[in-house]
Image (cartoon, rainbow, N blue to C red; front, side):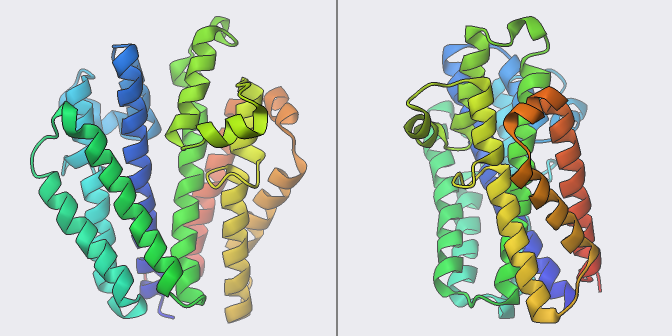
Length: 311
């Protein structure tokens, strides 16, 4: 496969995953704002989306309506939902012959629908419906991918983009929780602390699954263990790393080449398999996540280089 095609598939699905993650963050911030008005939660949402500096440069003070507009539809924000869908559609056009008609139509229909829906600022009363629509479009694209694509190298690059973005997003949510939402160690373990941990579960659609496994007992260590190490949770770090490892191994079997990215993902997988949440908390959650994000950043760059995306 041409590196340009591989890169198009990778970034197409990375952009789609980013759009859904952004919509989930907005929904979490909006839910909290209904019961606890203020700008702190929206500042944390911007931080998690890695959009805080861009927002401040263009809009200054953090205000709910401005943040929502910036994350949903601002063309000046390359990570906004609309920008992400636009990038996904552009990449889908580039790799049109590598994907099925069903996948192309799902991406194109999503773009056209959201372009119309996000042509104007979204009123607060319509926000839940718009966010649900974004998640549904993302789910439809994933469904058509699974239901119509061959399990070959093209499929592998699609999945690499999805799970690399998902791992990055979950790690950022966990990191921002302690170092933006809880700047004071005096709050750790308080009722405020527990509420904020539960908001993390909401942002990854993990409330019901966590409660089922833990009988509703939400603790910082329990939730961190769930989102870092549980191989059954589809948005946990371990689940994402396992999927990346599987797809890179299949590419190795396809091409018979072993690259730097294979070494990196093997190292990440060993760490998440052998380490415990108690060891993470002893080391420091922030330190663990900072290293994890550095590793996934390195992994993404290595995948681009190893498979010659720019050639």
